[in-house]
Length: 113
Image (cartoon, rainbow, N blue to C red):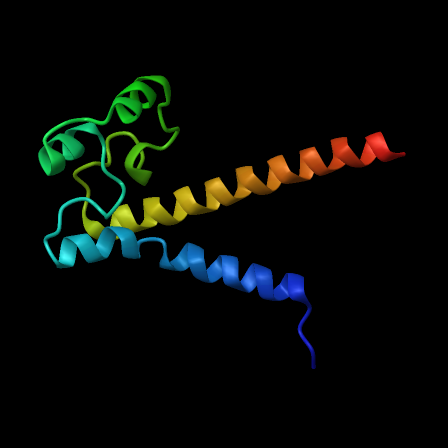
């Protein structure tokens, strides 16, 4: 039985959703602080001694809808609950992305008619 490519895609996305807490768990296990590349202005100042101009400018413009991949007030929750928040964040992000692609696709396909 041959699996359709869309089925493979959804399986891959599901695996990535389930694995999303790895970015939270590994730094905790290795006492590494923040996940690599997810530094805010404070972490950047500690790591390199200054805040790059572009990062400083953008950090005041954009506020993440789910900061730190957790819900408001969950910052000090145990790792298991934070892992759940990571999964919810992944599902939300994927859902918004799929919705945006679907809407853009519909708009573009109407122009061709």
